[in-house]
Image (spheres, rainbow, N blue to C red):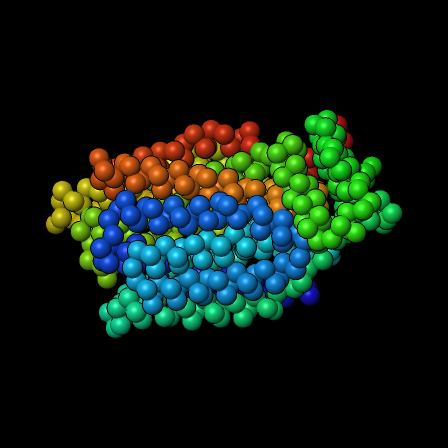
Length: 468
């Protein structure tokens, strides 16, 4: 499969998977069925908790079995989750739907990124990863915009039922498209982990070999300094292996556990990888505040049919951030920190401006329009930073368990998201949703301060430092 073919299929997979009209109104769906803000936040917490528990185990599973099969299973569960919401619109039905959706998200998180990166790595085209990831994120955001805009006429024609069943249909199509993705060869498969000592690394000519060797050696040195043991060893060419010759004979469970251990070790013991994992988790987790955008619009006095249009402004921001990922891939940590800081100020100000509509209802459209535009710009900045950080993390990973390492970042991101939901549930008992979101937006500022220290270097920078 060529890079172009991979790009098309990946874009379709991610795009159709987010062409879900329910995204625009599910917070209001819950509210209109009698749930208060605290109950809604508890649903979001169940969603994140499910992903929290399954994130890393599913990543190790993706490093052990077919990643394409897991993505198909993820799509099937996503379809089932939206069907539950439509058929059983009660707190229990919503809760079960979120558990199913959280499971689907955990299966896909890290799995898709690892599949794409390893497919490119098999052809020596890793440099295209950030661009392709940006395209897939842009496809997701475009689909979300279309789904959100479509939610208005769908709601007017058939209410929540039509929105729900159309979401089920698109989720099912997303599952079908997953079957067309490549069954990408893993850089080092779980089944072959114990055989690496018997294999010789094929010679690679040119700068690619130098880059791989220099980065691998840095990973080996870091792992060895931190005492990698318990059956795992590193070779002179930088590959992480199992030193237990009987691992394969013990069966798939032993291979799974070895892969899980390998990924978790690299995620926490290799400095560049650890920093990328932490920064990616913060940038991903903090965006959990987007679950409250519809409630912000509603609290400002905007009619339900107009809410999707305001939420769409924020999605346009993330769409722009995704499309620019290929151009901003080489950004320095200091520059990214400055831009993310500006994003924090924009978000804080946008939430407060939108909240002013409660006091001046005659200016509701002007204030919410300005507020959501500022939030959208901020969202785009944070989203772009997340894509760049994710690409740098993939370049930094040199061990066998790519999906596992990526899932560790996803797991920590869910921890941050849980903190966001818990804060929102408590804060809204004292403050308005606008004030609560402004405070959440302010947390972007300390993330900006950490960015120069935690953004992994570009591969070229890492090579230059190694050469020095």
